[in-house]
Amino acid sequence: MVLHGDADLALDGVPVDLIEELDRRASDQLVRSPWPSIFAMALNTATYPFENADARRAVAYAIERGELVRALSEMVEIFGGATSAEEPVVTCQILPPSTPGYAPYCPYTRSGAEVAGTWAGPDPSLARRLVRRSGTEGAKVTIGMSPCLRSTAESLADSLRGLGYRVVLKTDGPLRPPDSPCHFGALSADADISSIGWAWDYASPAQFLVPLLSCVQPKGSLPPAGVPAVTGTGDYSWNFTNFCDPEIDRRMRRALDLEQTDPYASARAFEALDHDLVDLAPMIPFASAVDLWLVSKRVSNVEFSPQFRLIVSQVWLR
Image 1 (cartoon, rainbow, N blue to C red):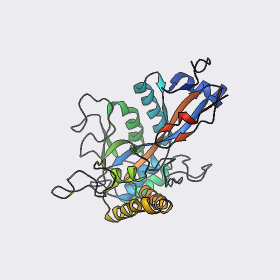
Image 2: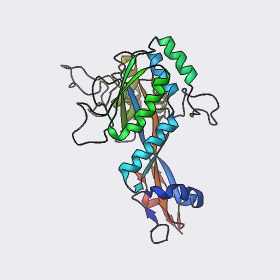
Image 3: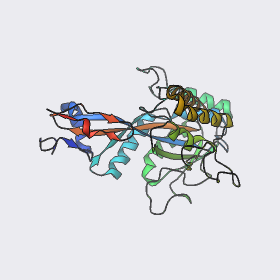
Image 4: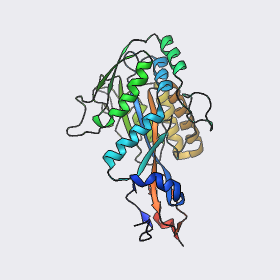
């Protein structure tokens, strides 16, 4: 309807088979905006081999993020139906674009990036050197990902085999929800690598860093077990990495406190946390999401909220 001038906004997505064509002949009608969400791999930092930071960084250097994003795009197309409201784009960071505290950063790339802080490609030779330094070459690595993510898991498995790891792929486990072919989370507690899909509830970088990487309260403590040790962002933990660093938690708490009194200082504190956590590599983000909006030729002044997406009241019609 939008393409024929019968409507001005397509709020339910863009036909998947038209995206490439629209980019060529009507790029001014295909509007993109960052949506604060990420897709990542959670590395189990509590067990061998990924208790070793060099082994984790080796994986971050070795993965083919472009291929992982293509696999994710295909999954979105299959499970999203004939239209797509989002498309994944490559990232190296836990904080997505448009999040307070976001500043482009990608240490896990070969040289030659056209824009500073972005990914140019894998660096397998450096990755292999890190594996040798870690002493983990030849270790068995279990990847646990839902059936819908099989292409993603197979791409990851190829990269791991190139590092000398013995890879086992699993698509089921006791933590997979019943009747859920597409679960972005751990399938079992003993998996070495799991998938993560995450978006914020409200506009704060703490909505990513705290539930994903804050220490988890042990049993018998207050607040109850299974919630982040850093309070103030909700009582839900999605930390499948088993990563726990009390100093990182203290910095998160301080950055959260600053949100109320000095938002700029808070954003800079979260920026430093994001970059430091990328360096530690307990989880390896590879994609963030971009919203797709199809508008008519009459539409201008398309504005977006980082939390509520398209601001319909600000759209102008000619």
